[in-house]
Amino acid sequence: MTRRLGGWGPRALFALAGLAVLLAAIALAVSIGEIAIPPATTFKTLANRLFGAGYEVGRVQAGVVWEYRMSRALVAACCGGALALSGVVLQALLRNPLAEPYVLGISAGASTGAVGVMIVGFGAGALSLSGGAFLGALAAFALVLLLARGARGGSDRTILAGVAGSQLFNALTAYIVTSSADAEQARGVMFWLLGNLGGVRWPDVYLAAAVAAAGFAICISQARALDAFSFGEEAAAALGVPVARLRLVLFAATALMTAAMVSIVGSIGFVGLVIPHAARMLVGSGHGLLLPASALAGAIFMVLADILSRIVVPGQILPIGVVTALFGAPAFALLLYRARRPE
Amino acid sequence: MSFSVRDVSWSAGGKLILDAVGLDVPEGATLGLIGPNGSGKSSLLKLLCRLRQPQGGVVTLGGDDLASLTRLAIAQRVAVVEQQAATLEELTVREVVALGRTPHRGRFSPWTAADEAILRRALDQVDLGGRGDQSWHTLSGGERQRVQIARALAQEPRELLLDEPTNHLDIQHQIEILALVERLPLTSIVALHDLNLAAAFCDLVLVLKAGRVVAAGPPAAVLTQGLLWEVFGVRAQIGRSTRAGRPHIQFLYDDPVRRP
Image 1 (spheres, rainbow over the protein chains, first blue to last red):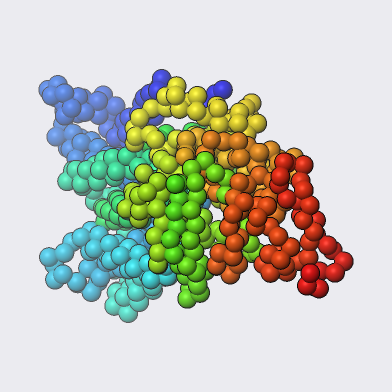
Image 2 (cartoon, chains in turn orange, purple):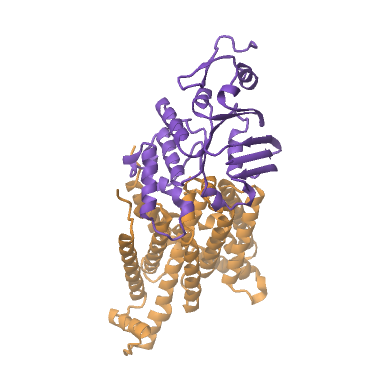
């Protein structure tokens, strides 16, 4: 009997191949940009930074490669990985193929928080835009969970509560923007909401990497329990899974991952919804394999999307959320079509 | 004693579903839960595996208060087959049955030869030996039920709870499944609709009506004309089944409303 990618040999090979593709994508992301930098210079800069090679490189070019492009690529990778992980976990816990990191109102809350700081001036300057987004995301998430709990749990109820929460916070955002913002601010908000990796620097890398790594560790330690959710919460409970505790831990992990990523790069749709499905078609639905595969696929996808966002329109950078949806949706449609169930 | 239920009550949405229920299940027995729709059969099964907590009374398992056991401890001992299992995931038969090993495996422990042997034996027991790689979604209702029973057996339980396991099976598999359940060296508690199957394959039956226990004991002692009228509102003659000493119920279709 064969199992899809069973055994450790094929799995290790698969993981190595995924990592190689990710590294290649990051290398590509570091080499491409508005300022043409010769590949040799890029290579030398990386060698200097990573291995202390000591090549002669121009300071400006080295700065662009390392401070700007490298940090940007790494944040994109962490962000894509974390969002895809969150999607896998939420789809399993809520048993809903449409579940995604933003279904619990997280992105809507983040945008309200960001808008609150940017336009109304909450926190009187002590709170950064990302700080506001992070707090808003957590507030929305807490509200949605309370609402779901008040409605006596259940996956459908949780999703409905998320929809209600999202609508509320989106309306708040729209209210603040239309009543208080000038045109310039409104445009800034729009740009931020659609995802923007422009301002990313190394401190953001450390934060994103730490959050993504911690989130991955938590999720992968619950892979077996997530498998047990295939036939629903009661079936999982009957298999010995402490359902209530698991839900809380994993909801909290996905909320923190998503809130952190949204606060760094804005809300980027599509990745959390679609990458898990694409990964499922590749490696099956066992979470021991699906979680790492989704994380890798999400990271690769986001790095490539970021490259596209910088080169599609010459001289202008598209919001990355636009690219993920614009290129991701047709790709996913193709996948969906090819993996259609036999009649 | 396997399960012992003392004075257990449970209500949902302000409605009393189980009312001061008591029962004792000897080790190794096959107990049939019978009663009309809504009499509390499924609810009682859920209380026995603590998917629900009783509001009054005590359930013990092997002498231990069920409320004091961890979910994991219960799952290592009690396996449940729900009425109709459904999933959206693309799973193979093997993957579904392998879920039964969940309570016995650590978070990261690999799939062992022992797990594999248990899985294969479970598939053989439900007559699905060569079908491991088939997709769950291509199975018939009856096959799905048998896969779920294999999953439950892979859990290596001492107690097996089944909620109307024969619902979607053709008659051959109804008989096979119940014969299997009776033969297994386990304590089995089965909610059943078909009174003749209950009479033929259960050592004991417990009759529920509107959340109360009406009668309990060996089928021959419990399934009387008077009880069938009182609980189910049907007239019947009780004969002998081809299984030694078991009653066989012949329903009288023509005059269901006249009291015998």
